[in-house]
Image 1 (cartoon, rainbow, N blue to C red):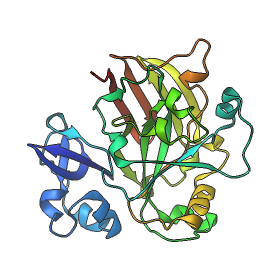
Image 2: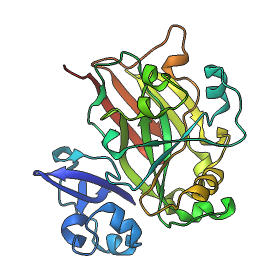
Image 3: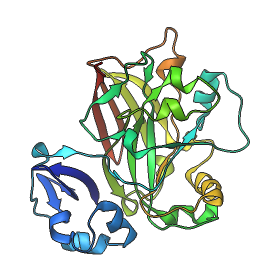
Image 4: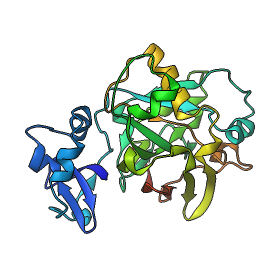
Length: 282
């Protein structure tokens, strides 16, 4: 089941993406589950399936929003693929490198990724997302996948010069509309093994990143065990699991996203996240 958040006619809603459109769950289940995060928290997938498969709106008529526009937490993993560590010249870490994003830094599928006026070093990072369905503290890695409601895609756009101002990543990861999230969430029952997925990032049709999720250094279970030790995870939390090698900042010469570019991140079994890049106007 593919679940998405969108706006239509000026009103935010969410629903099931089916052939020909979207089943509007906000309209049908909104009194019980007002948004996708509450559907996940209430384990309302059976109710969602019972809403039928006849679309209420056409996908062409909606504005796609971040899959979870209002997460309690967005936790991102840095340096989680060997090839990416090597291209950055960094050394291996004994524990996952974790940093946070703010919800306001996100945009949806087919919405503009915005390069801020303060920078011309706006980089792409295609990544797999795990969305928490069942919360908890100190979740053992061996049980962690049971806590995932579904999977999605992130283009974790990075403002590299601001990221490198200090050893803290936060400034370069939280400019408004720099992280694309979508186009939807595929429920975990349809992805029995998240370590058998393939990530491809394209810029203007050219392949920039091409890797398998089996190449993660810290797998999703290990990441969830680690982050749930210091923070209680709750339904709807977003875990962005790291990017493979091939980022623009490490290329010689570097390749950054420019005004008018089209960035695509495809993960087989989930879909393709597509965004135009725009330069912020003064």
